[in-house]
Image (tube, rainbow, N blue to C red; front, side, top):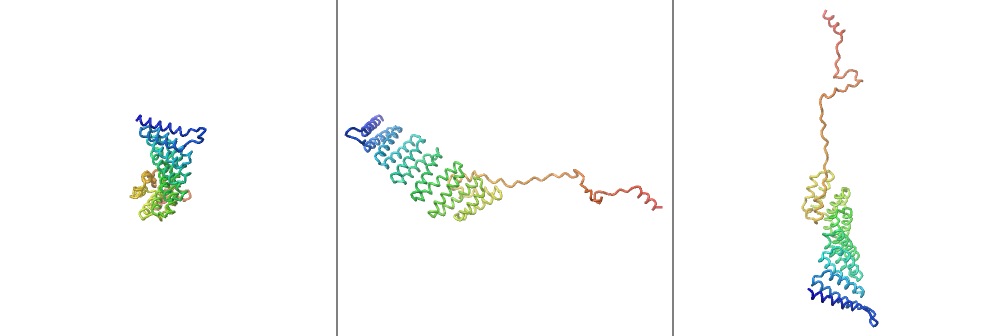
Length: 320
């Protein structure tokens, strides 16, 4: 290990010597300096001194940039990203990836720029999903500028799935619509049908049944028969507030086998609560006397006339 570190330090001394100027040497020798820094980085990597390896790679990148070798400058930063991954120093990866992508674009290699963004986003996706989301967004913009629609749809899919994972349902709905638009340009109806299901789920997660129904009406013609039947049942269940029907629809096989983020969304989707039935009132018999209208004139069935004394005398006289 010590021999490798000594060898690396010797390469660094040679690189610094190349960068010095004098009366007869007006301009630094950036080309040879970059080569020496690269050799030093290799020695430090072999010696497991990763922080010094990363520093040498960044110095080599700066020398290439000063020499207008932008592709090689970006390549060195690309290697530094992998060193940061090995060091578990993930906080610097996003900035390095954006810097490398910018250099690739200046060189005229936007595909390489999108690739480095994708590579860095995959490293960050589990532990730093917000940074990965921003890198994927930039990758979409880079490739769509170059009319690489199919690749742009792939990156847009990753954007939408991370948004769903983070619970950013409003932004996820917009991202899915953008992804649908990219698939329309290449005529991929099957992918649009699957995205229509995802968009309906996201709109239901937002609590917007009307938007979910609108999404189905707009893109349902791209779904196959099983997807159409399931979405019709699902929307009918939310319209009728039928939790059992909604649960059966969300448990359909093709929803369970969607991308992990969408299948989890379907699993955790709030079900309709169902129609509440009011309890019957308990009626107590003879709790109060029946109401008699004062205008009834005493003709109610409940009032019976009582015989007075005069009637009794009449009856007695009649017997006589």
